[in-house]
Amino acid sequence: MRSVDAETGKPTQSTTVPRDAPVPARGAAPPSAVTARRSVAARLAVPAGVLAAVTGAFAYVGSVDPNEAGHYPVCPLLRFTGVHCPGCGGLRSAHAFVHGDVLTALQANAPAVLGYLGFAVLWTAWVIRVVRGRPVRLDLGPAHLWTLGSLLLAFTVVRNLPFGGWLIP
Image (cartoon, rainbow, N blue to C red; front, side):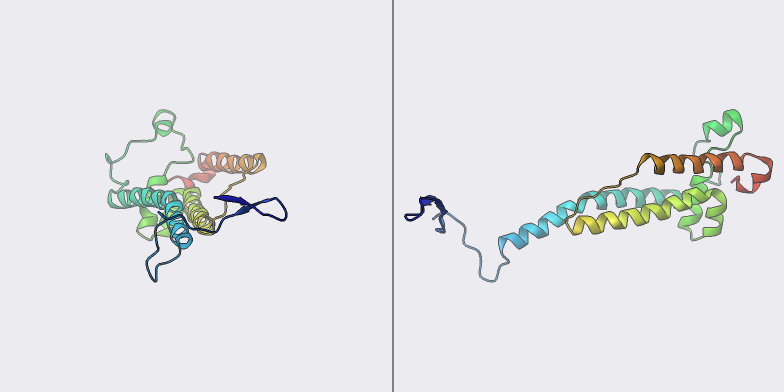
């Protein structure tokens, strides 16, 4: 309902409650608090889903050993060219990481271990920002992407050279 102030002629807000408005139960939280709790839970649904998917993938790799032949497909680049790609050894790394053998995980694929830790940090920051109601942005500029790509390329080249044999899983 809108009314007009008699002195100024400007519209005013009515404070009357409509007759059909629900009456809150005695001791119940105000509707804004309930809505805020629901919205936080709804906003956490996507990060929780991502964590569930990653946890499921790590649980599977942790239970099915990639060191035994026949469980996972062979890397096509390795099969057809003999060149180890930057992802070669990633499953063995994840398997060792799940079992707490960080040194073996690093030997199998060090960038993968850094990726696991990076994911944990980014996911935690994501959840904190979601809970606080702030927007989530990951601003990677071209310099960041070129640096990351260059590091992965250098890792790939070094692991395929004779002196980088210790990087081969």
